Amino acid sequence: MSQEIIKKTATNTKKTLINGIAADKQIHPNDVRQVIQAFLDKIIQTLAKGERLEFRDFGIFEVIKRKQKIGRNPKKADVPIVIPAHLAVKFSPGKEMKKRLKK
Image (cartoon, rainbow, N blue to C red; front, side, top):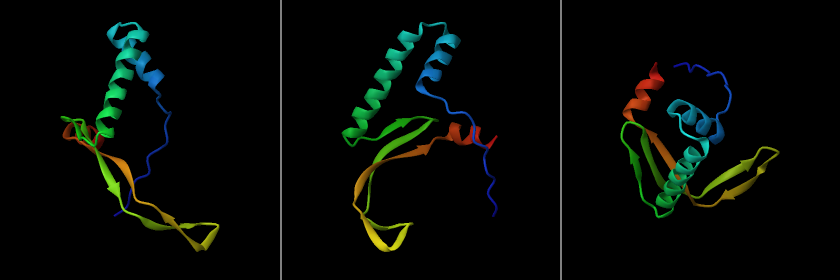
């Protein structure tokens, strides 16, 4: 099964997101900035407590524990490196996101 390589496009930042929403909704960018920052802070707080965060049709954020594993330094492949167990955030896309990505 071959995989199609997606062209690398421009990176969108929080600033471009804020300006886009402000223009679309005709709201001052500072107001949009405050709401988006509060939203992001709340996401971080929720995940830091180990809670799952679900946005219907968008996706699910959850904290998972990655097991300890052995890695290799490409420059010194004969020297194993222990990568300790750690917590990571996993994102699973929702139905609407999967549907739009298929197009």
